[in-house]
Image 1: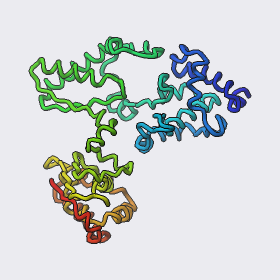
Image 2: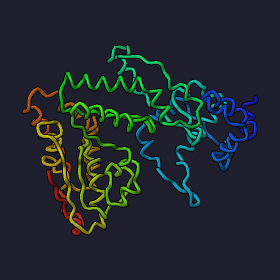
Image 3: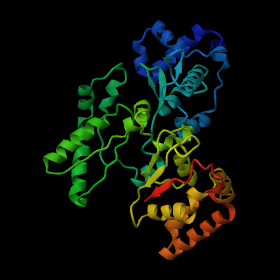
Image 4: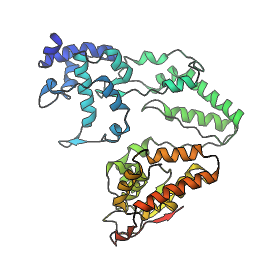
Length: 382
């Protein structure tokens, strides 16, 4: 009764939530109730108050935060009233989790398992599960090496210096560096390593330490950090450099005229969207599309199918999605390509299947003769 009445009583709501949030993130206990309320006021739903917040089933919330569409739709620096604010989707997620905690629709254990609460930002971050059930099964469900979780001491910290972070992770970092050295000794070089993790996970620092260690042993090392390329959109696009996967966001980049396809998606619509960000009405210069690929690989076959066989970029742009929907009535094209490349016994089988798909496109597609004259055809370089 007390929890149901809390939705219409902001003071009671914040009091109950304050106690529950102490169990979600122990650091909340270091805040006074009035501090907690002050931060919570910034997320108060208007209009309607907490009673207006719809609490989705837990399974629906898990599907939401596991979907790439949720993250693609998040704005990096939305503004309201001339100041930067939290993205609306992040606000709605926090409001829903708050109400779910107060009404007990969301158990504390479930929230802790799926989310980390950032006290200073006062929003929830989705926890990434790296060791899923299939991964654990592949690894025999036993860890390669175990460590004491010294990071637990940071749970109540409002801020953490790198010195303390490094000390807590010293054993793990050293084990990683030694494992890389053993891998190089066993497999040789060149070796490509991909290090992924959330913001402030120490990726840059461990890469610097690994690089120094390898260079001391006479190895040549190079590294690429993609965090800034993907997030610093203002500086990037202001200088005329765009990441073309932003095509899903509908941005217009007519001021650019070169598209570099560093990787080739298996979905033709994604490639068409990339080029369409630059090759569109309002473009006044010839467009150059550069496609990079490794010979004698799946990418080479994909390139031949999409660009040489289907003649993708001469197909009427507006009709491509219609053609694909027709072809994909039973199975997505990406799945068809996957099955072709990984089940074919010989090169001739791949060629025959690609020819079959090519014929499907040719029966359903046209040519780009009707495109506005000022656009022309983008120049393709391989």
